[in-house]
Amino acid sequence: MDYKLIVAIYAAIVSTIVFIWRLYEFYADRKSKFNIKINRVTKIPVSANYKLAESQTFLTTTIVNVGTPKRHIEQPIFKANKKVDGQKYFNFLSFDNVIKYPITLDSGEKFVYDVSDDVSVDLKTKGILKIKAIIKDTHGKNYESKWFKI
Image 1 (cartoon, rainbow, N blue to C red):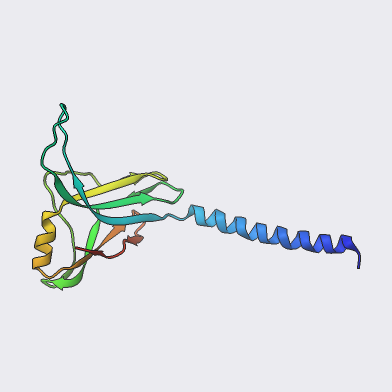
Image 2 (cartoon, helix red, strand yellow):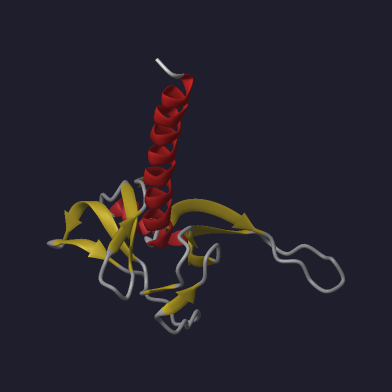
């Protein structure tokens, strides 16, 4: 067997694998992807003369656009682990924090949605022990976080 034939077969196999990999990367980069996490965060306000105020705890939903294209998202919706008053989905309504939706997120950009941790006491009294954040983009596709124990 000629060594040129073996090299040609090897080159054809490697180039086919690289071609398939590049096609996968091309289409995977074009997909929109969001990384959504819910955390409990303590924030301490600091005045202009560096005096610390009383700390406040928040339930923070962090949304990061890990895809390449720019995406627009609607207001986060939350899903409870059980139905309360016949409803499993809910949202936090805050008159202090006025945000205009939809929000545009470029590639790698992050949006943080804060809610006072006082609501976790109310959720526990209603029997809700876990919540999940759901983000809907303007194309109608839903993205969910993992369950967060309150």
